[in-house]
Image (cartoon, rainbow over all chains, first blue to last red; front, side, top):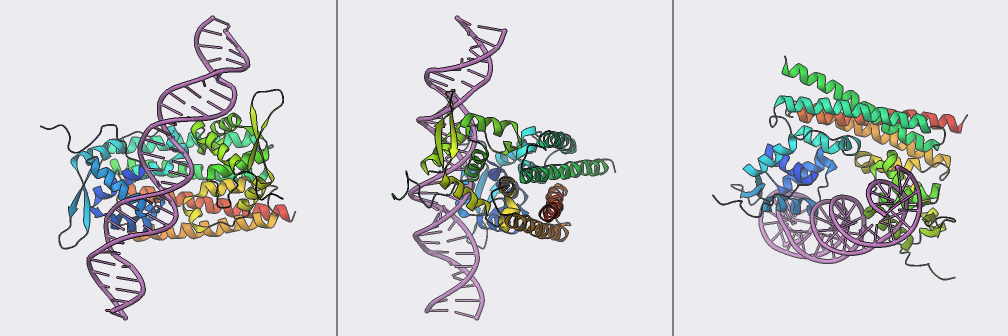
Length: 190
Length: 190
DNA sequence: CCAACCATGTAAGCTGTTACATGATTGA
DNA sequence: TCAATCATGTAACAGCTTACATGGTTGG
């Protein structure tokens, strides 16, 4: 058998946008325009819907052999579908355990990963993921809280407010993660 | 008087990192290395501390006449200080009212803005800012909540979890904003 | 038929990432 | 003295933003 179609380099790592596209197309083959609308009109709107970001990103995924173009019957629109390699790549990403740095500064990417897990990873991976979220988020909340206590005196008032916002958000996430973990356990052992 | 020193273009708009540097240096003149440590060891760590981002950003601000280099007595380290133009530029940014899009997708930048406001903007600007945050954040929470209700049935379970995380975070922010607004009113009218 | 929208794309420019390079200073 | 850390930088590269361009389709 021939090695790899096209230029599928092994060192190519999709960006967060790339995985958002892979996951979206995995759920349902779609055209670039449909994805743009999705990014405009749903909570996926954290991603830019500008054509200058989406079309080149789709093209890269095609070049790497993770997506393919196909013409949809009856219309002039071309839809993108995920390939076997694309599915493998997506699943590999979905199975990755969380990293502390992501919990601190890239929570959105973790939520994207979680959102696409349904039906793609074994239940124990999902449970490990959410359990890890709960643990790491609480650790981060404790650190933030400690930092605020240690610096309450010498910080400007508005700086303190901003820090307290960060703590409030992190605590809300920790609470959500704990609740979700419980919900998942209940779901596995009904 | 000569027009403008160096190349201070009027169309130059600092990035969020640029404003983070301006605000940091405004509080206390510092060297690039000290700023890197700040970005590594405090909750400002949402900004990368890599030299490849910070040193070029500092150089740009110097080129635009918003910062100046100075040698600190006794050491070989060079510190950056903010210029009159830099202060004006910073204050102009700090006085900007919030935009809905920022509340939805760039909350961190808004918190940076808030953190640097102390002593730089009149109290009524600060109050307007936080009042606007409270209002817009609640509106966003309502939208998210509505979206979740409308789509609860046809969303994958993990997708629902991710959306609920977003709602929990937004509600925590709305609560924080309301509390902060109250605290600010109490501060203005003691 | 003409305006509005559908649908896809390209080009220039900037920023940030990663990796590498360099010399000074400090501590064991 | 030798390693680690201080301190500052540069170069290559990739990705995103903004702005522009283009043709098809639909509705009034």
